[in-house]
Image (tube, rainbow, N blue to C red; front, side, top):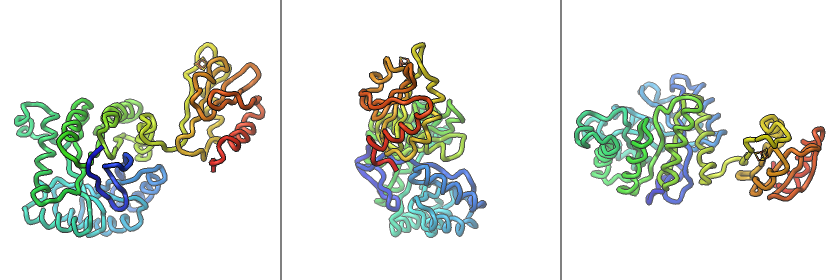
Amino acid sequence: MSQRSVSVGSLGIGGSNPVRVESMLKSPLDNLMACREELRGLASAGCEMVRVAFSDPSKADALAELVSEAEIPLMADIHFNPDLAVLSLKAGVPAIRINPGNMGSPMRLAEILHLARERRAVIRIGANGGSLSDAQLAESGGDRSLALVGAVEAQLKYLLEHGFEDVILSAKSTSIPETVRANALLAERYPYPLHIGITEAGPGLGGIVKNAAGIGILLNQGIGDTIRVSLTAPAEQEVETGYAILNALGIRRKGFDLISCPTCGRKRIDVQALVQRILPALSGLPDGFSVAVMGCEVNGPREAAHADLGISGSPNGFILFSHGRRIAVAGAGNLEDILRETLEKICPKKN
Ligand code: SF4
């Protein structure tokens, strides 16, 4: 994780802070109602920071309204127009995403940095594989990772010339190896927090796998301070996937951890159906509490010996176990009741 940290509003990013999960509004500021609804959904899914595309000065009031109502900090995403950077900072956003080299004259950039400093706002700068120019690629000898790093460094230089260091860096592309190498180089060279992700990862399973592989490789190397899963799907799914990646790596726990076996010829129950059946009884379990659903009593309790609570099929119904030890039995008719009673005993923190 990065040596330096920044504060976006009250949200610490980088340093010893937990890896943050962020997303981006998919609704435009023209539709404030839709933005509000999306923001509410994101906040309840656990999203910690939300980027908002700000591309029209006439939407500054809408942005200000959203900032004042939002439970989580907003970052205005701005391309090319210095007026938008000024307007968004005046609207109260605690962070902006700009490329300083595109902010018009040096005087305009100085004005933006002055405002950002005054309002303690953070600036995210970055490079995207899709926007690398021929000149940047030629300079790196065609090495796209190096070109990404070079593009970030070119933007960072503008800020460092002004002594502005409340920055988050990002280098992303659709290629996992390219993104991983670029971020590894940035982490090696700079102390600033890194926003990581794979761009345009696509929809469905393929998109989830691409995000999980790219973000997972980086996080497992200790690289990355805030993540954005990019999916062609509702933004809440990006957040859920982000937490699932952090859970899988054991970096952060959100919600209970559901384990289930893939089943084999020994199975006594339909594990998939049982998972669906018991989910309502599990709601409210604390973060990190692990529940295992296993197909048979022969191997289930042993294979899931680490689980706080396990259920496996048996010739007469179900057995419930905790850390490998049998603690209750249930039949098809009373499973939910026994499950609730057992959870009350072993997990008093539930609800
Ligand atoms: S728990 Fe039982 S049913 Fe599930 S995979 Fe292991 S042996 Fe097969």
